[in-house]
Structure formats: C-alpha cells, structure tokens
Length: 67
Image (tube, rainbow, N blue to C red; front, side, top):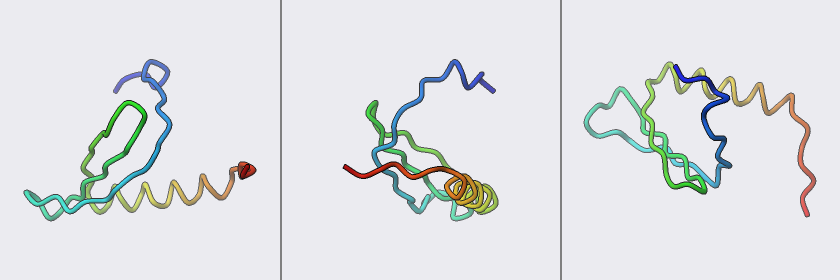
C-alpha cells in the first residue's frame, strides 16, 4: 500500500453509490473531486466498516461554521 503522505488529498465534491452490475456482491462508490471522478468497488462488509468508521469520525469532529 502507498504511503498516505505520498498520495494527494483531494477535496470531495460529492459521491454516489451505484449497483455494480457484473457482481451483485459489491457496490460501486464514486467520489467526485476537483481532479475528476474516482470509482471504487466494495463488498457489503467493507461498506459496513466504512459507514461505521465515517459515523464515528464525524461524531468526534468539530463542525465548520456555515458562511
């Protein structure tokens, strides 16, 4: 795996979850960034772990003030 410090951090503009037709046991995750769209596929187990991790991380972060 690459060193995370060597990979550029791209601000997310949006995302989509898509059915992955070739294999119903995975879901497509599309992230829209300033550098374009990046597509990943994940199993139910990975999607569940990501969801829990995102919820936990969001609960511990301060909110940005809306302008």
